[in-house]
Image (cartoon, rainbow, N blue to C red; front, side, top):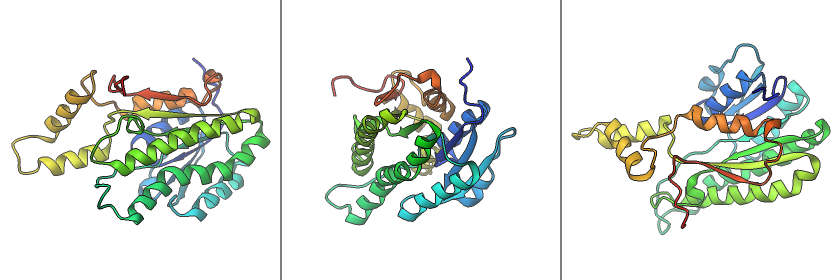
Length: 259
């Protein structure tokens, strides 16, 4: 299937690793040029996909001015963007009663305000180009929370609602906005945590993660980042032209429909 993405310009935040890097790879394979945004400059500059232009922008999207800087690079290098993938994010671990305000604020800025600021900065260019696509990488935890990360749950839920509101506001400009709620995905963060938790025990990190999959996902395994990326790439294309204001679960059956 030709997704007709050749020559499009896609901005991917959190684009140096995990799901973001897999999305970037998938878009590049379809011929899209890329602006990759991440905090780790060394890892970001190691990303290269032959056949397309890749521009790396080291940025901390919890800093308000960095969104404007990203938009300025996009305008300078490409004259605007056709696709924005708000993927930057990370898990949390805390208790509501003891987590300080600054911890809440940091995740709010990363998961919600970064998406808001980038939309404000990049949408005018999308309008000039005749339309575009904005996708938000949220989480199944936006609907079905995990008890150990309340801040992550709350901010991802807010991101989903922002996505819906933005979709309603921009559809008249031919800009489609949707959200994706992944379940378990085998990323470096999961592996790092599993290794720490199983160090010095009789359980391997692989066994630890397999138990999480067995306990939560009927499919019985974690997704690969590439499996998640494939959905993002499709939703970025004109083949998904009737998808507007929706949230798509890709969770191996984890979602409990009674919640």
